[in-house]
Image (cartoon, rainbow, N blue to C red):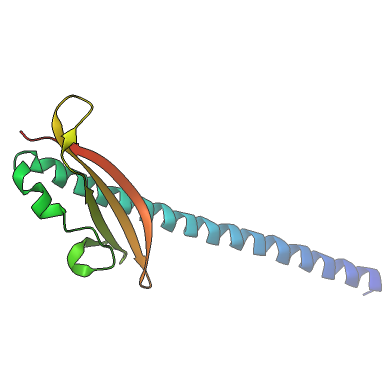
Length: 137
C-alpha cells in the first residue's frame, strides 16, 4: 500500500468518525429536548389541575384563604402542594391569594397566582405560572 492510499484511508476513517459523532450528538440532543418538553408538559398539567381545584372553591368561597393562603413557601413541605410524576420528577405548587377586590367584570373576588416549581437536587426551578380569579357563587 502506498503512502497516498494510507493517507486516503486515514482521511476516510476521520470523516466517518466525525459523521458518526455528529449523528450521536443529534440523537442525544433529541432525547434531552424530549425530556425537557415532557417536564414542561407535566408542570403545565399540574398547574392546570391546581387551577381547576382553586376554581372549585367558588362554591366554598369562605374557605378559599384558609385552604390556599398558607400554601405560599416552596421551600417548606407543609406550605406547598406536591406531585411526583411517573418519571420521578417532583413538582411543587405555591399559591399567592390576593385580597378581595373588584375584578374586571364588576364582581368582587380574589386573584390567585399559582406557581409550579420543579425540584432538582434541593433546588427549585419555576416551570409554569397560572393566574386565575375566583368569585363567590
